[in-house]
Amino acid sequence: MSGGVVEAALAVERQVAAARPAGIGARFGASALDRLAPLVGLAGLLALWFAGGLVLESVPAYAAFAGFAPGPALASFVELLTSGEAWRAAAPSLARIGQGLAVAFGLGAPLGLLIGSVPLAERILQPPFQLLRMISPLAWMPVAVLAFPSWDGAIVFLIAAAAIWPILFSTAAGVKRVDPVWLAMARNLGAGRLAALRAVIVPAVLQDILTGLRLALGVAWIVLVPAEYLGVTSGLGYAINDARDTLSYDRLAALVLLIGLIGYALDTGLGRLAARALWIPAT
Image (cartoon, rainbow, N blue to C red):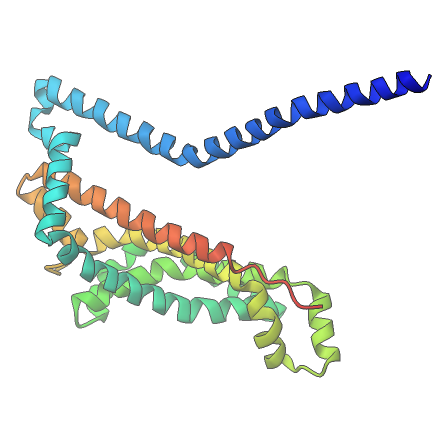
């Protein structure tokens, strides 16, 4: 009887040992696939671009737009980088985006904290804010041109008008999710409203604020190009408009690629920053 038990135990051990490498291999394969998944998606997008380029080259009616094909566009993109034109076009746009987001953050985050913390303020401000949020930022373009003495000021206003709402509502939603136990503990320890705001609420909703800022960046980056069709003579939007007017479609495609890469880099950076901002109070 004891011999049979020993043999059974040895058999189970051999099965576990045989299965262990397979399990490790499966986990390694899944991890490698997970890392390669973004590259697969980008490769698919590139393949669609090449397919579209073949269509443009093969159909005579689209011959004038052959510059959108990957070959001419990538050659023009390299020229943008090596000549420094990419930086000269991107720098003013990045400055305007930074100013617009700063204004949106300076207004949206405090208002979000107020709406999330004070129910009466939410009932008063929620209807007008929801109404304003549904208005396209570009609809304010005539107002911005009249209200600001410079084109740059008008563009920053349009960017801020687009970016404020994701920050405001994401912050308000984060405040509402704060655990009441944390606030009760802060009050029991003698913290007033401002101290609780500084020590508990703001750290607790920091991830929501950064997530809202990430969403705001995406909206602002989309609004930037048409906003720069105004009277400015610099920026990515101006460069796009100039390439369109001169029928330089290879340069236009290169600028579109540049806009996408810069926006992707900014979004990725904010996404990683938001992922690190999860706050757990010390116990």
